[in-house]
Image (cartoon, rainbow, N blue to C red; front, side, top):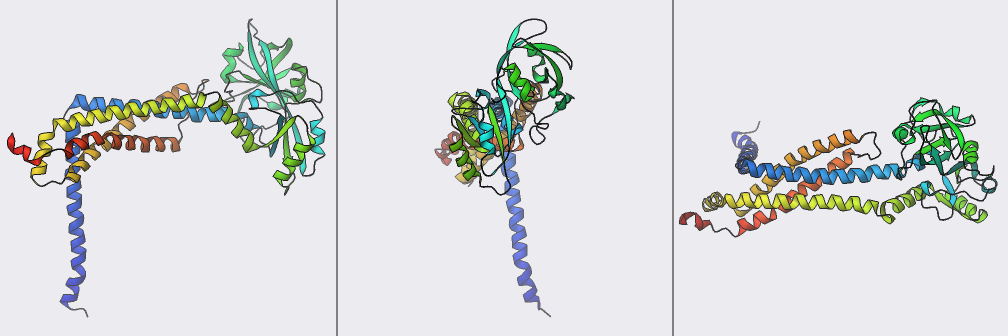
Length: 404
């Protein structure tokens, strides 16, 4: 049986740990109280700080949300028509830059070892005449696939199977006003050919803002005056176990005037073209950086002003023995509290913008990952912005409290 000395030796460390935890918790509560009081002392200054941070969050998350939404739209058709390999006209930058290949490429692809199936896609631009008069451009997409993409095609009216009938098309409800139509059964003309809406999708949009019009391969060839052999893209499905790179090389040798790309390569090429070569992505990222800089400047100025207003209080703390690191921690905590509050306000405003833009031609996509990244960036921005206030404190002479 352990004696009293052994019992005391085992309980003493636990008591010391508990006392240390209580002391740390008390210091933390005091630090938080001081930081909060400094923030709320001047309501106008606090409002300016939160407005600046919220504005930065809205700009940052809004532009990044537009960037994410743009990526989704750009590669939307690639994902809806997923394939192991794509055979595309040489020099094709994206799906929306489609042209017709020479013909007979499908037969050459089918004769290649490792190829199980080849599906044709016909795509190209054509004039659309509205029922009430007036013209607009559309992109005709011809496919015989019943379910384009794994769950990516949302039909809200009609059936895709009805597109096999001559003159039958599907449109997206986002573009009904642009096309001058409103419901299933409405008619229009594409390049002088009368067409009727038999199905309607939702959320199938184009980065170029030119509406997609879907029909069968035969229907697209008729509307584009293409021959029975011409196609814009070939979607190649490989046999199980086939070496994709080897099949890709063999297809490239067999088919002249075309390129063979994997699904990932074609997606990446389209993203690079629309987001960077055209400058669209750079402008979105630039807008996000501007928001970050604006928020950082506002927070830095506000924290600096707040610190300057409380120099006497900080000098008193220093004279009473508070370390410079403790006071610096107070300033950083102030910045983090302001950052969290401003982030909450900014994210709420951003989500309202997301809701307002839903279904429009310019969506904003806020994913959980994006929201978390913006939170981290906002807090880092506030920490960096607190540097000006911290420099003010490091030059503070504790003896100045006695000269007041």
